[in-house]
Image 1 (cartoon, helix red, strand yellow):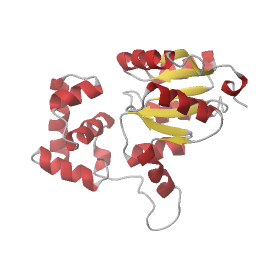
Image 2 (spheres, one colour; image 1 turned 60 degrees about the vertical axis):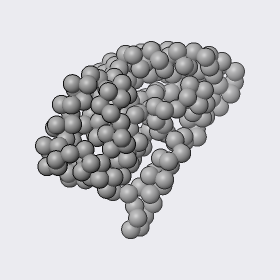
Image 3 (tube, one colour; image 1 turned 30 degrees about the vertical axis):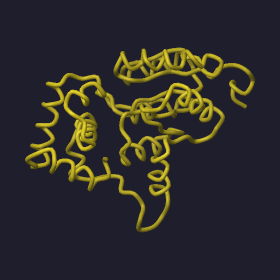
Image 4 (cartoon, one colour; image 1 turned 120 degrees about the vertical axis):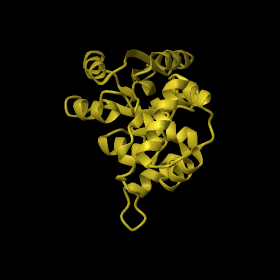
Length: 223
């Protein structure tokens, strides 16, 4: 039985490498103080591993992409030592390979950062109670990946593997028609950094413009 079901808020630890985003999530979840309580936060893998051990949360909200290894590395280091901790991935990415990787790593659910504060609080309570939670369009990726047969989702793509996690994030938003300024705002980076990532993606994929990139991303189910 979860703490929430006994009338106590679910203890939550937040892991994301953007301090501004963590502040926003805290504020959103503050409106659901009867359901959840943020007991700590971390901006790196090392901070996350230490913080989870110290605060002993029920649920960890976990960013998928971070500079020092990301959600998969946190899962790898924590799951064996603290098997009762439940992980819910919270990411800007809705790419099939990201979803599949963290679920295989042991996360109980995966929601995107477009989720509302109230929906996020509900999702936290659901995973704490033992139920898997996914943003609507992501559930199909998981079903495909863990089913047997010719339609099972591919886990790796040699060309896609050339891109860094941040380059994939930029590419995904670019393919959806976002302007550089909008991508910068969404990912909490500068426009100059967006331009650098786009140039790197073009070089690695040997493509010449954003229209070709959009097609390339669509073929790999990134959009």
